[in-house]
Image (cartoon, rainbow, N blue to C red):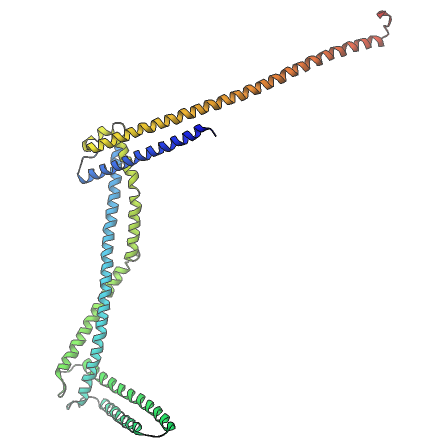
Amino acid sequence: MDERKTVIKELENKKRTLAETRNSLLEGLGETLLQRIEKESFPEPPGESAGAVLAEYRKLQKEIADDSEIINSLELDIKRLKELEEEITAKGKEQSRVKEELQLMYTRFGMALLNAHDSNDLAGLVKQQEENLLSKIEEHEKFLEELEGQKGGIVTWLGKNAKVAVEKAVLLKSRTDLQKLYRRTGEEYFSGEHAEVPGGVDGEDAKKVMELKGLLSSLAEEITLHKEERRKIGSPPSGEGSPSQRIQKYQKHITNIKKEFPPLYLRFGSLAAANGGKEAFSSFLTDDDSEVLEKAETLLSQIAEEELSIKKINAAMSIDKEKAEIEKMEKAISGHQQKIAAAEEDIDGLKKRIAESEKCIEELQAFVQGDHGSKD
């Protein structure tokens, strides 16, 4: 392999490294200059190209700012959704607690109503149901006591246990039905209009029931409002997805926008490093910036030197290639010339043979014509 190709490869790598270093410098310079113009309100550099880069830079910055503002708003929505979930859960637990307490108060109030002296206005059927249930409970309790007192062998013991289990189940159902009757009586009382609490019933219990009903209504209303707010935040009418999904979309957009900045910085820095750029950008260039431009200029010269060296080596290789082609063609010409000389020699031999053949033909023709004596 031609060693010069290895040298060219090394020069190309060196040239690429120099170009990358220079681009990195100019990219950093472009970023510094663009940010300085925006933050410190420097005058815009002259030239259509510089203005176009600056306009593009501002456009990208605005897109990021707009997306960031939306993300901040969505993050607040997510925070609010979390707060709503916590509030709905807490109020739901409170609602369950209040419901349970209210049921107990209804039961207590209903029992007090049925036992009140002036509860004649209650339906006779309800009173009868209470008496029937109380009678059943008393009957089953008495029967259980009798069963518990029975003695006997294993067979008697097994039969007794079975009866006890049945009686306990029936007793539990009767007690439960009685509690339901009291609770229903209390609920029905507060579902109507009553001027005053009957005698024998604690008025504070009535106040407590009304407080619990009011609290329950308030909790239900608050939970409904929270759920509606949660629905609006979590499922916007636009159909763009949840706040988390929308945040991911805008974050991805910002990431893609940021990829456009490095080429833009390089373009702006290259404008400052171009011929006449230093003078055009002089109003907002610092000493550090001028030093960067000098380094960029030095690197550009070095790149040009590497390019020139590569071109010279390629030219030398082209010369050698052309010489090799010439040598090849000269050898071909020499071969053809040798073939021509051999062909000319063959032609001369053939011409000589033709002359001999023609002379032989003449002699033979003379002989055929009979002119034999003329030769003696």
